[in-house]
Length: 188
Image (cartoon, rainbow, N blue to C red; front, side, top):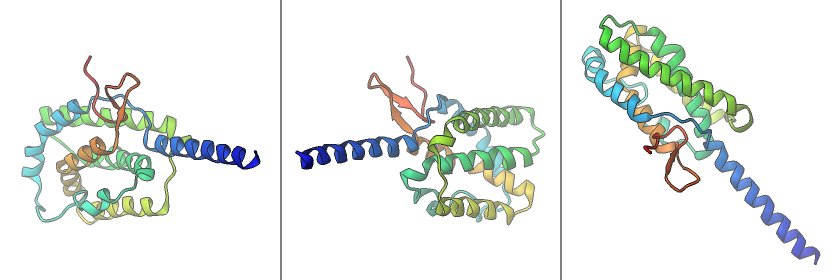
């Protein structure tokens, strides 16, 4: 009887740990990624035309983002949102009002995601040293360029981060439709 009880208790603990581990990836943030991607597509050519360092990358070093474990997705998302909000958007100076409007729209979406993520991160989001190091590499890549060039480069590579968000923050809603957790907003 004790063995059966211990087995049931162990199963329950494993299920709870599994649910908790999945929740580390899932801070639900309802945002329409298509609008962000559309705004990016409208500025991409302009940003890449201004990019004077075509052979240098900040985010495109695929090892930095592609090696992230599911346990670390929340932390990386938090850190990259902060990188774009606190550095890239602030460092970029845009004279074209149409481009500025699109960048502001993306920045506002990132601020919204950052604020919502901060509300759930304290209980769900832990940053391991390996993840902090991966984020540091991105900052180091940014710091190697002059501020204006680094901001332009990072804006031109925004599709790398958007694709990473799409890949790592797809969830399912209760009714079985494809849902969002920093993914694509559902259509009714």
